[in-house]
Structures are given as C-alpha cells and as structure tokens.
Length: 245
Length: 245
Image 1 (cartoon, rainbow over the protein chains, first blue to last red):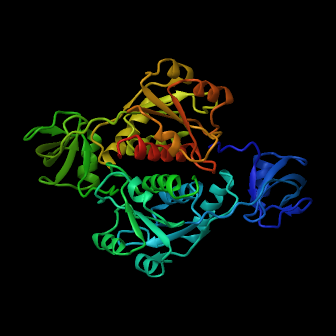
Image 2 (cartoon, rainbow over the protein chains, first blue to last red):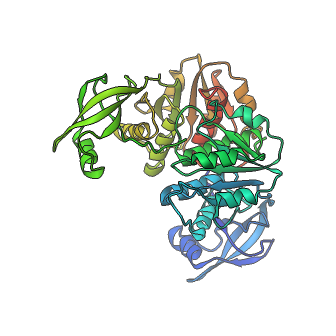
Image 3 (cartoon, each protein chain N blue to C red):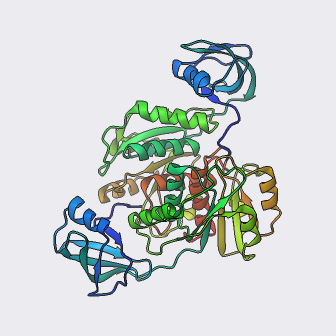
C-alpha cells in the first residue's frame, strides 16, 4: 500500500531496454529539473506500458527535454487485468477520483456508459486518459488501462461478450451482502457497471436483470455515493473472483 | 446506493417527535429559503442522531432561522456500528474524503492516530466533525459517528480493549488476499487501522504484529493510496465480519 516511491516514476512512450537513451516531454523536463531540481546522474524509474519498469539516469538536462539513459530493469511487464470497468461519468472532481481509484484497484479497461440519470453527457477522453496515467505513475501500475469512447447502456448490453460476467451494484437487492452472489460466479472475464449518483432507473435495472450474463450485488445497508460504491465493489470483486486470489 | 434524496435532509440538534416545532441554524435557513427557495409547507427530512428520521414541514421562514413542524417518523433510529476506524491524518483534501468515505462505509467512531510517517500532525477535530456531518446528511446515516482526539500509535495500542480485533493493512503480507485472514476473526468488536501515505515504519509493523489482538491483511498485488486502501479494507471487512452480513 506504500504509494510514495523513493524514486520519481515517469511514463515514457519509447522502447525501454538496457542502455537505451530516451527523451522526456517538455512538462516532464520542467518537473525533473525545476520542481525536483534533479542533476545529471540522478536516478528515476521509467515505464512505457509494455517493457516493464526500468531504472534510468539523468544523462543530459536541456531546456526543452531531458535525456535519460536506461540502466537495468526493475520489474518485468505484467499483463493488463481482464476487468472491464463500466461507469456513468460523474461531475469533474468525482470523475477524476473515480478513474484514478479504478486504475489503482485493477481495472483493465475503462468504458464510460451513458445511462438515463447520467448527469454528465460528455466525458472528455483526454481527461480520463490523463487521470489513468496519473494513477499509473503514482501507484506502480505497469500495464496502462485503455479508455474507450462513451456508449449508451443499451448498446453496451447489445454488444456484450456472453462469456464475460457483468456485475452491477443494485440498491434494491434482497440481502445486504455481496459475497453469496459473487461466490456463484464461474466466469474469469469480469465486468463491473457503476451507475450515476442518481442510480439506475427502474427500466434500466429490469433491462440489466433480464440478461443472463448479469449478476446484481448489494453493498450493505447504507446508501453509498457512486464513487464509494465503485471502490467497495472493486474490493469485494477482486477479493473473490479477481486477481487478489 | 442512491445518494440523491428527493427531500432535503437536515441535522437538527433538538428532540424530534410528532408535532414538535424545531428551529434551523442561520446557515440552514439561508440554504432552505435562498438556495433551495423553499416556501411554507415545503417538506424536508430531519435527524438528530438519536430519534430516527422525521418528515417536517416548513412552518415559518424568518431571516435568521426557519421554524419547522415535525410531522411523522420516516425511519426509526439505528445504533452506531461498532466499528472503530483508526486513521493517520492525510493532507486536507484527502482527509476530508477519507472521513466522508469512512462514515458512508459504516465507521462508528473515528480515531485519528499519529504514526511515524504521518505528515499531518494536527487534524482539526471541528473539520473532521463537519465532514462526518456532511456524509451523514447526504448518505442517510442516522447514528452520527463520534470523533476522538488524536493519539499516538503506541498509546492507542496500550489502551486497546483486548476483546476488539484490530485489523491493519500490511503491504508486506505473504499473500494478496485478505479473505483468509478475515475468515479467522471471531470477535464481533472490530477496529481498522489505516496508515499514512508513507505506510507504517518497520518498527510500527513489528509492534502491531506482536499484539495478540491484531490481524494484518493484504489488499491485492497493487500499491494503493491510503484513502483507497481505507475504502477497500472497509468493504472486505463489512462483507465478512461487519454489518453487511
């Protein structure tokens, strides 16, 4: 759970291998040399989403970019978790949080979904991707989750892979405990659908429950905000049918 | 999970019973009459932390306060969950979030704990209490968690009730899955200890593990930020030994 790396960790979109020379973006260069005041020889960690994590040394600090010499591998690449995270976009601050938390908790792919009570019609993909990257940099993630274009709920269900179990949080479930429903899941491919602050409409809940690939889970006796429900659902899913096992 | 009540929900520090007349604070009066533009006869929900939740009607709107007539009970009082939530204070924004989420997830009492790597020496109790109240108002909580004064970790452990199981999140656990450790817990009184962003020191972890009332749990293979770990831990605890059962 230690989120503070001793070394600064940077995403670099270039091949990483021993002795490779790579160049930072202008923003990264500014951050390394002006904010962190790093000098030549200083060590950082690099990842690119495909070659694992590497140590690198600051080789040359220019005004517009910094050149880094890749030295040795810190960790091998890990696969993207096969967990499709479907969510109704929330308002800005909470949406940033929702996306960062999903990445920390092991979402493999992020799918914005427009539902009836969704208050935010457009979720800027670039902003979602920036939040994915921030969480990946800070939390030691090696495989960077993809962000898909928003779809409507009915399209999502129409195009759903039949061998992927879709879990959704249902405030009208008969019990309070999600464990029984989760323990019955046989699929290894999982999706989670988190609704908007206003919840799903009755018609949407009926539509979801009618699909053979859908499992509804409760999350206790209290009302949870959508972003809290998201983290709580990811925790119980990962601990039962996900990659904490 | 529906967080948006149709009716405005207010905390009122006065006895609630049928036909009682109660008065709002100045801030609440402003919010009801100027922000929500409520008129006489409009309906709200009231709670005071001890008499359950009640419907009330706006009876008289003055400039400094609004008088409300309590009509009928909406829900009976529920007890405070017996879950002691111990946490190292984080920086402001994240601390607000941490406290609100803890209340939503069923913490019964909040205990700030100063650890070696805690970056925030003082957690203003008034601010913590304001966050508790905000979460309680928004999330339909009836029993309001108490906020204790900060203590040092060693004092917390010295004064610990021996029949309360203390769970802490340990990044150095041997497995990734918390379920096995949680399933071994027999106590009904539970405490959760969430560390600071920098984690616990080695000495603190050793000190915790040496206590017979402590259970260390892992939370998966990824690094989690402290506030994410808190919600994830509360979810798996509530689903196994807490009040989701």
